[in-house]
Length: 113
Image (cartoon, rainbow, N blue to C red; front, side):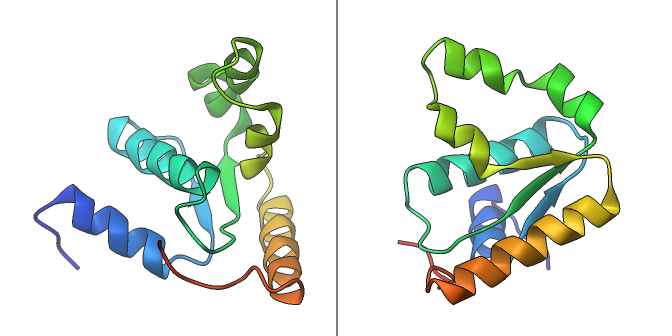
């Protein structure tokens, strides 16, 4: 699919996604990641969406989530919105476990508010 407006790309991206694996990237990658995190944090998305940040060294260098907590700009629990790893197996296990739990407790509904 091609989209003229990034807003529409991100809308469909969020609407269709069951999980999100984010690899190292530039401003576009960061934009999509942070918009997704913001929608989840503010509960504007009604579904559970596991997020895996692949490439621990990159993500800890680029975004210091602990500093955001320390400065009070995000809550400590917000860091739990994502899982950081360098292992394909860990990423797979995390996603399958999170999706199974969301289905079991009924929070696996898809949709945007």
